[in-house]
Image (cartoon, rainbow over all chains, first blue to last red; front, side):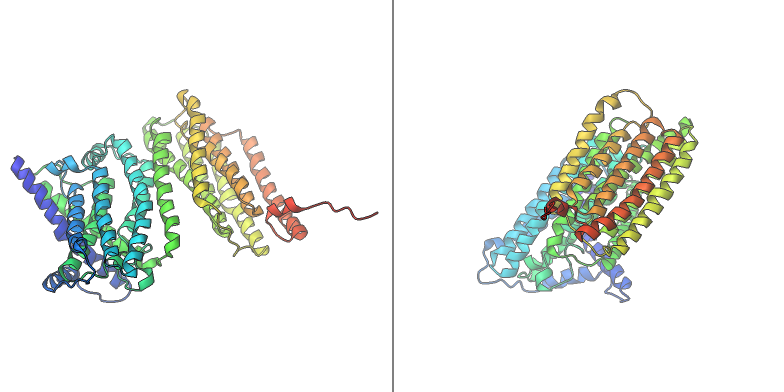
Length: 317
Length: 227
């Protein structure tokens, strides 16, 4: 039984890796259709990654060991963080590490190495991208933690697995704090995964890019890992929003029916979230970098209001 | 009182009250006057919705009337009048961002915590199911006051004043099930008359100091020309 559970946890982690490019491809496809283009097929990101793995990895002369190691560290840390977030089923052995603070810490580790790698070669763009990424993350991280702490205060646990189970057991109570936390977390997710209006994932226009500026010097398998890690992070945030706020449908035992149902519902939820993201990206324009702190202040305000409305309105009620 | 409807109504009212509080923050943050007027109108809509829910949960049917009055006055008529004023004063493109937005937001959050602390003894007395909203309405009042303090633009100050009135109305509705109808009518028309008077004042202020930035009034001096 324990071995089977571990196998399930492992396959869920592998499912994260397998699904991440599909979500990115789906978002690109929907966005292209909204812009009256036909767009690349949804499995195009898989082809890109396959192609990049077959190419030679070129390195700048000034690159150090850190530059070579960073893609592996970034990918592994993001993957570990993703494996902690329940995707298809709850109650897996990985639930023991499924703590919000662990997830935030692993993501911070990945970001730290990403920024170091951006600065390592010594190009101006890498340094600029790294400093901007640090600006965004320094403001986004407290907002993310506050938003998730709002949930944790309701569920009396910072463990994501327990939060999901608490939510499932709940009576579907309409909580103002959840609405605020959800809105705050959506803003944080947009900023952290580098989507419009904070960063544009498909630009190579020098002065506006954040994430692309840091991985500008990478090629071949290193670039493939970096892009895959970014897609994984997008899927992680998607799963966090879908499963923590709307956990209905997630498998609670390891039966085949429950797992199949969990897989279909989570894919449906992620497809909806991806479509919503594509619509918002088609409608919104990217904002100036100096407007980003105001955007993230709003996220922090929403998260804090979530906490306060939990204390004021829900504890006494 | 229909107890079987109470939990859902109570939840919905909590959500609406929290959104009133959020609209107060939105109002505080707005740089553009037209956007601020829109935020104020939405706050009026939310307050009217809370009133409808209290009326549906309790037995006071006159609250339906005051909800309709709130909706017509605070969500439609006063915003429309302010819009017209702003357009006639040619301020619709006027934008005045806060000088220290993060600091102002932190101050407003501190006011929310302060009002919660202030209301705690009341909450511990078992009142009706709306008791938690008293803290929210007090916070709305204080944030309106904060807005009047930090804004130097006269129209924005009036919006702060009106949102204070929204907070008071919310407190009255949620704590005691609404004021007597006569009082409510009186307050409503008071607010309406105030809006009209403020309009006249705007023109007067602008005619005398050529701006609606009331900070400039501090620099007015009474010059004593010779005999």
